[in-house]
Image (tube, rainbow, N blue to C red; front, side):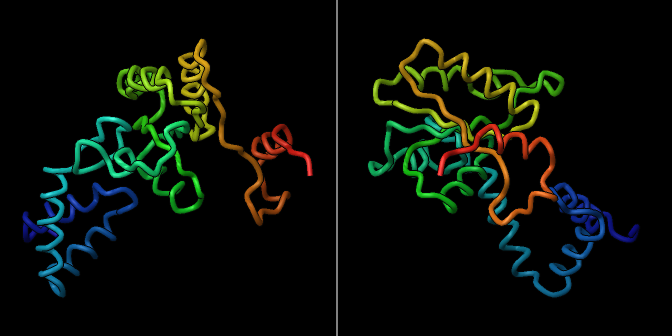
Length: 198
């Protein structure tokens, strides 16, 4: 594709999106240019506006156009509960799948010194300040059970020490509808360790 440098730039820009390889990016570019230029123009306008106006909520660090996101601004949310997640997309998943009615705190990743991600990058000083709020009764860690996720959870547990806060972690184990023979050993071990009475 050497005939058009602008076309190459479009394809390369689309390739930067997660999960989009060279062929998919090329298909998208050709579709927009050959069949739906209006959609391409609208996409460009919305993306430009989003890049300019979407920032982080001052309270929970999720993505929002406002100083405070709609969840933090809502009087219906329970201020006694704080769910700590890695990414804003985790909030969407929890909101869609559960009846959780508390507040959130978005880390923006996991501790990973090799990648240059330390406590400052995750806003852990702000999280520690939230732990000292008098209304807060429980913090729920909803962090991936990876090596970095476990290190992050332990770091957060250390921050919560000394407060009257109840710290809990979401359960990990066998997925609903899953068959034991297909579950990996580590997940099965977590499921056995976290077993509950009937």
